[in-house]
Amino acid sequence: MTEDKIAYPQVENADLSEVLYADKLIVSDSFLVVINRKAEPFFYIYDADSFLFKEKFGFSGNGPEDFLFPFFMNQTDSVSEHVSVYDVNLASFKDINIKRLLAHEEKAIVSSSMPSALIGASVLVENNHLYYGNIDSGEGLFFVYDSILNVRNWISFPSSLLPSEGDFTVMNSNRIAVNTRLHRVVSGMRFYNKLYLYDVEKKEMLKEVMIGRNPIFPILEGQSINGESQLCCMETHATDQYVYVLMQRVREKDWDNADGEPSRIIVLDWELNYVKTYQLAHHTNSFAIDVRNNRILYTAANDEGHTILYYWKETFDDVK
Image (tube, rainbow, N blue to C red; front, side, top):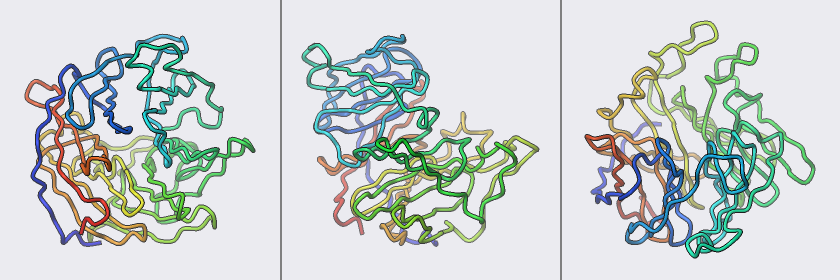
């Protein structure tokens, strides 16, 4: 894949008041919800249209409305004004009803146990009774878990990746995007400039794509990754038409000081055909798609280390 269609989006700045360090973003109906990592509370809610602050919630604890280390669970069929969260340390799901929470009503957060097969997931996508996900030290590239049958099936590592040594498979850590209508999953690799397209119904790989002319792969030192290893895909999101892959040009050892290395977002269709590349003006480790407002949003840090939200207009039915 040659990145020969580069776009430089004209972004607008939406300074998120209140939140100190936005780690992850999700848009649910008319709300933007942010996970804050460096201080409590964990969650901040904004109006997705105007970015006006509305509420913050979520403190450390073991109760049904408490959190320890939460992640957003992506849903292929979003529930209006609901946000699904899984907490890896509590091994639980949390369904958050934003309207109830803003009205300070009871049962705004409903907790349920997480199946043991999903504990430790670094990414989860929910579609009814099926869960698509990955565990960075897992048995394969990604898994499909059927909650009715209580069966987890792993997709084997492609032969083009370095073989794992025992249980050391973190070098193959990846992030996935799912299209349940097409029964397809795209996997973007963290330490490889590789993308893989799978048909999960037929359980077969449809396509493998290398980004650029020269292969990138992890540099190993026994059972650890050398800090000189380059990071590639860090996050994926998708619409019905396109896959959006957040790519970096930074070494693993420099990740904590990567502000001078702007990120980019590669857009592909569901055949893994290249569409375009958005070259960002900032480094980001998180972005979100707001189809309702025709926006792509991403976070960056200012000189004080506080979060700035940037966004630009996007027409998702035709990004070409």
